Amino acid sequence: MYFDSLTYNFPSNNNEKQSVMDKSLQREINLARNIQSQLLNGKTPTFEGGEVSGSSLPARLIGGDYYDFYLLVNGNIRIVIGDVMGKGIPAAMLMILTRGAFRSAAESTIGPGETLTAMNQALYEDLRTLKSFVTLFCADWDPKTGRLTYANAGHNLPLFIKGKSNSIEELPNVKGIMVGGLPNQLYKENHVYLEETDTIFFYTDGIIEAQNKKGERYKLERLIQTLIKNKDLAVGEIEKSVINSIYLFTEDVPQKDDITMVLLKISQQKVDITSLNSPVLG
Amino acid sequence: MGLMIEKDIQGTTTIFKLKGILDISTVNVIDRLLDETSEIKTLIYDFSELEFLDSTGIGSIINSIYLSQERKFYLKLVGMNELTDELFETVGVYRILEVIQREVI
Image 1 (cartoon, rainbow over the protein chains, first blue to last red):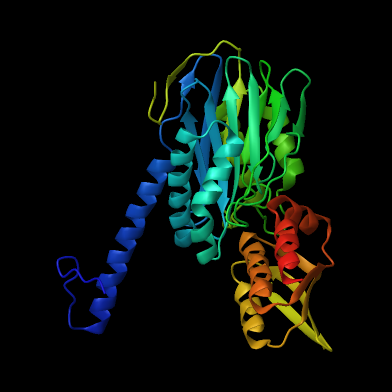
Image 2 (cartoon, chains in turn yellow, brown; image 1 turned 90 degrees about the vertical axis):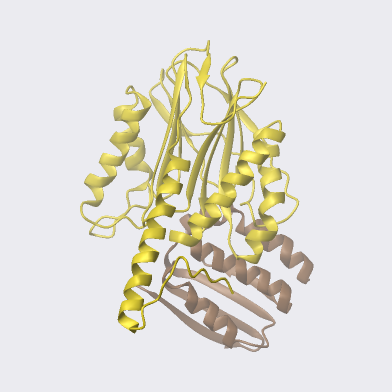
């Protein structure tokens, strides 16, 4: 048993003891929230020719959704979005574990399929022991060619907003099961080419499952309408428009699930990445 | 709304008919029922009256799949609506069921 008498000096009265423990727990939860918030909402890469942005709103103090960007040595950007089973503190702990696995795998793997394979290898035993799983979608964007290569581990497909034709559709399918479902999984890849004004909208299901007072869900159709209406805005403004639209729909109904989205928008093909929240190699 | 499970035993086959919502607030109902149920040869989950399930609900179904491997029983999933079917397909529930049940058989 771990005991640290420097941290807790328990009063003899039971109510006082409870109150001290409650305050201490609250403080620790707030610290955990700050840690998660800083890890999630760190610096986003800025570059010529396009923009990326991500945001996450936990349903509780902390949550189990995850997104990240990683600059690869070849100049490509690796993007990941994920959803850990469950909510609150247990999901948040596994989210941190997932982040570590991604950062480690991103550095040593050549493509998104291999990244997911490595993450499943790393996390499978722990996730099965804890009876949990993570859905993940991982994509590499090559700014030189405009090619977006991606692989899927049980996550919903991102939306492909075609700037020129004014249409929105899901990215072409690529199958793969959740991380933590089965050992030794090989994740296949698929790809599309992005043109100027195209946008990719990665998201977690908390968006389309948000409920209003009548118990109706926000659904994919409303999300598509919101994206069509705001597709010409900058990525940060598109994010705000989606969040505002969800708030307007749900009114005062408390958020039940974590809400996370990542946007990648292309403005021109020649790209020079200038900063990122991951170590720059090479 | 919570979750109600109608348990029907037909010989060595046990059927759990799920009614309502299978989420973080109700999954323990399934876990409790599985703990209480012994001597299963075939377990059928009937989702025809299930209104919603979240990731914790999916986790509970996956745990049942792994339990079928441990306790050596057949597991079948029936009555999924279009949304649940699509969700199971996306996250990989059917693939896990197929692999684990192959080992059970």
